[in-house]
Length: 139
Image (cartoon, rainbow, N blue to C red; front, side, top):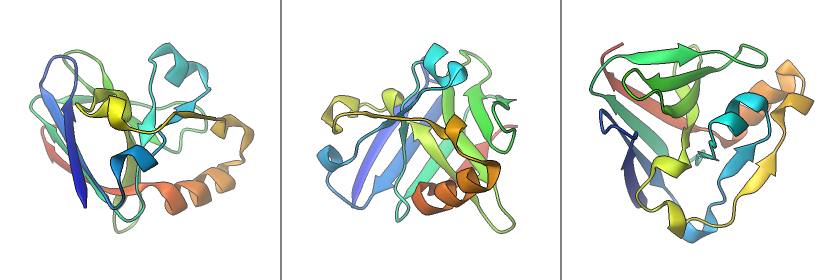
């Protein structure tokens, strides 16, 4: 297991991901939608790993695209830290890889285009590739 940590730009929100493989084998996914491109977000997840996000202050929730997922951002610096979906018994999601201290140790990024998927296909894909997310701190 590899644990990497990071934080938003102002340091109020901390994040950690536990990965089951070697860091350089993970390729952050760069979504090509307008929302993610404008914020230079690259997503990282491991379906066998876990994500922990600790909000020191409240956070902002954005919805975009098919409005199925929630983008969580620090209320202070507005950095998007993760995208999540709340399921019946768990929260799953992917974190903004650019916020990790070890970002440069990750593999080459790949471009993905979720906007080309149907709502059902998105949900299925997320269930297959996203991590379980633990959220703590203020809402």
